[in-house]
Length: 343
Image (cartoon, rainbow, N blue to C red; front, side, top):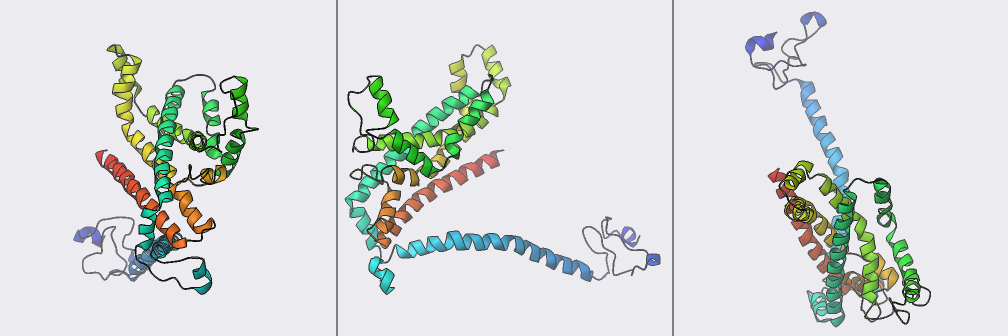
């Protein structure tokens, strides 16, 4: 073998074809990592490299087109729209003059938008606290082996599988003032003297919406935290128990520190999901009564499509929401990247 004599190539599956087999010495010899010294590069290999490049582009191009068409174009269009005076008249005339940052300034001076921001913070914080606390409790409970554990854990995933519109409609029936199940239960147990207007009162509407969203988010928290608990080595707990550590001490000093990366992922993803919740609120209250459940998401929709037809203002509100979600998305990506580097 000429390749072995020259020592210029690495022997591999590509070897010089013998002359008896009709091979062409000097043209077809190729090692795995390079060509033999003095030989011309094979024409077939160049074609193969070009085809490989075309194949790579062929795999990547659909993804690029998909992202550009369904993500980049709407984002850029929404950003441009937020700097235009685009009302209902612009739909017919096609004229939408640029007004700079007037839409953003009008939003900041709008008292309803301020109420929506406060409601968004209350909705997000309340949802995350109860979803995480109940989800962690269920994850710890199911981490112990007992009969029908898998079946019960599967049943708890049902809220996660239902469409949000269906869940919101069911909770609207449950919380109905006259015919709701919750009021019937409270009255029969003599916990209240009169039916509670859960979704019709300014003081209780947010509680009703929070109940629904917490019920939806518990399975997500439970599944992720349960996976994190299962990844903690049992030996660590056994060693701590031999040293006399109580169950509460093991949970505080072993479970929670080892579960911290999973907790960060759960809270960050939960925040990104909760901050853009629209379906549940719109189905249950449409932001009312008196804007008591109005969030930035529902207010942006109401500005654009809820009869006000102020598309520029609606685009500005949604852009502010996108910026907030983007900040937490970057935080999530950086935390996951640092975790990978640490491994």
